[in-house]
Length: 409
Image (cartoon, rainbow, N blue to C red; front, side):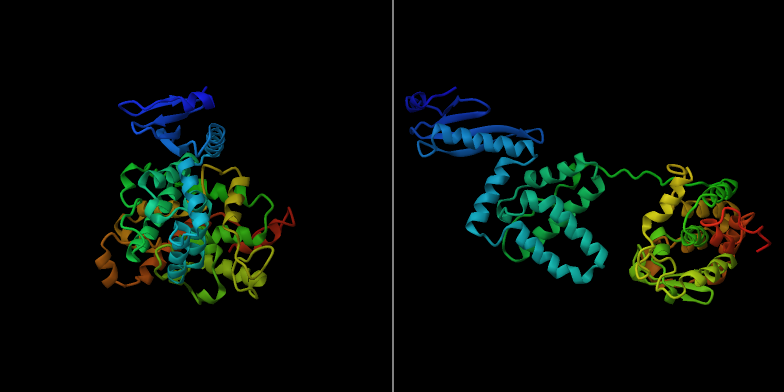
């Protein structure tokens, strides 16, 4: 370890050299006699150097304090160089720091997004980006600094979210470039070094007898009648779980369910011809929730929709976790009905509201093919409901263990 006397006695040489103290701290002596405290550390697998300050303006004890502070940052996963820049920017009150520009970018773009998406964007920036880079001026942010944020998210297995965050950081920098605050976008070229997103198929049963057993297992356990009805309605209609949970009575028009674009994943309005079995569910449901805005309202507030987790919990409690999930009914329908009607796959894709590969054709071909889709959905409804109790008996399931004997639907 160094002492004050030893530091004072260090003489310049023809080339710069370093004298180590301890814990990564060293003093660098330049040929002109200048002496600079430095702290070497590793983060994200790479070696970095923090310049602490010149000697004697920064004493040996002050340099050690700075080293200890930097080590404390490293223990919490923060880069000491980034912390130093944040502190300098905050002290100077610099307006072109990343968070200030990002919040302006959010303000401009929020009106174009759904409330849900805007909330997700804001939350991810507040959770992952602002704490590490928020106070750093955009002109001082480098690709490795952005990559460190993304790598930290990848370590948490938030790989898909990390890619979205990288895209959002890139969009903020594009905004900053357009307004003359920086000349470069450090997030723009990181795509090739990010971990790939691996999509695992959602678990789904594709045998109709197994699906019948699923309903028997689920409906033998206590649950709210609206949850049972939501599960059946989800299976019958082939839509996504969120579209069922958020279904409103004003979207139902006779034998048609019209889902507005704002509630669809692909942001295109979707029309669902309702099978006889789906209409029977609505008839029963009106006695329960007909005065509420939602078909399947929250248990705690009728003016809010059913939680997206409710149906999943229902399946999990019946022992189907990892075997079948709410979204899996779409795979069930697709697999079974494509096997039965191999020449009508295009109509089945319409039922599932999948995006057409040919986007130009999708724009010009707006035919709904309601008759063809209704025929397929009715056949699916007949297959799915074979042997199941009529919907009205689900009203008794959660409160009466022995409901009346079912009669034909």
